[in-house]
Amino acid sequence: MASLPAAFAQSAQPTVLRMGIGLSADSAKGKSVEEFGRLLSHYTNGALKVELHAGGKLGNDVTMTEAAREGKLDMTAPDSSTLASLDKRFSAINYPFTFNNEAEADAILDGPWGQRLLDALPQHGLIGLTYWENGFRNMTNSRRPVSNTGDFEGMRMRVMQNPMLVDSFDKLGFTAVPLPFTKVYDALKTQEVDGQENPLTTILSSRFYEVQKYLTLSRHVYSAHIVLVSAKVWNTLSPKHQEAMRRAAIEARDYERALNREGEADALGALKAKGMVVTAIPRADAERIRNRLRGVFDKYNGEIGTGTMIELYIELGRLRTLGVGAAVAAASAPAAPTTSVSVSAAAPKVVLARTASK
Image 1: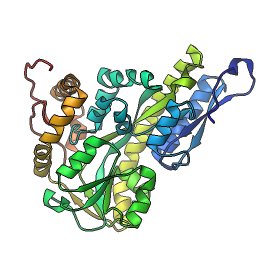
Image 2 (image 1 turned 180 degrees about the horizontal axis):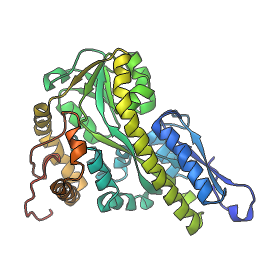
Image 3 (image 1 turned 90 degrees about the vertical axis):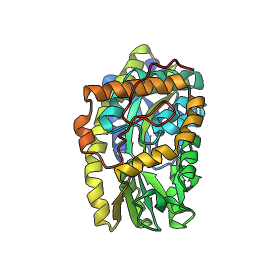
Image 4 (image 1 turned 180 degrees about the vertical axis):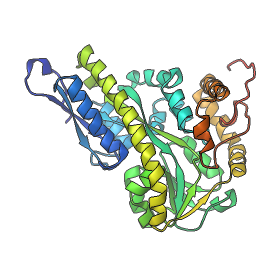
């Protein structure tokens, strides 16, 4: 059972908040939970502490999120796609080839657009503190090198448990297999699936190189973690301790992103050293992929809300006009989007039209 902080003011004992994650304790995420706990203890003078439960010991993203909603788990930090079952707008973050680089993702998620999504969570029994980074996702498989869209055909690819991503991978010729992260290694080892897609740091820390030969640098989806608190826990906290929790989560966010990006820079070399054969999706193929997905985007734009997508694309257009993240974009992998789209497509270079929301 979760340790609900019902009367910590009357007790000399600290309240210990259990936080479950799917990744390992030595991942950037695991280390950042520890940093978050250190900061939270500091800002509450030891009244609140965090106990990390890593490696999926308390469940997967879906089950831990549900446990937090029910008040059976204090905190978790699932991939944002997990929350699409509660609010479809969270799927927008995972649209393929939406963000060119990390700076764009930071600006969108830390700004008003990202906050509007977090503001919808209390009605679902959750408090969203901030966005941490999982990173740009890349593909691995055990069958063959992948360097163009023709190589996708017939490959069984594990994807996150998100209908938009399942439909996207199916449309591209894969057989998409949605599985919780905790089952991915075994599914690869037994060849239940041929491949998976995750950031480089996760591919390395999860030892997928042991059961996968081929790595494709696709950077096809940016993936974020959302730091969640059970609303049942949150509502027992004083305003002062709520503010301390927000402050600690945001400071740990900056630590986590820096740690994750440093790890990404090192992970590629490490994976090559482990014997993985590395290819890349050319920039021209990224545009063809996006065009093949127009029907999928049209479907989910309608479910998410056209206004939400327009707001996202307008803000991306503004950032690109200002040159936000240009230096990062120049160093990005070849799969970054480059052409203009309407609201019915993904979000590459944005050309704005005076269009009313539907």
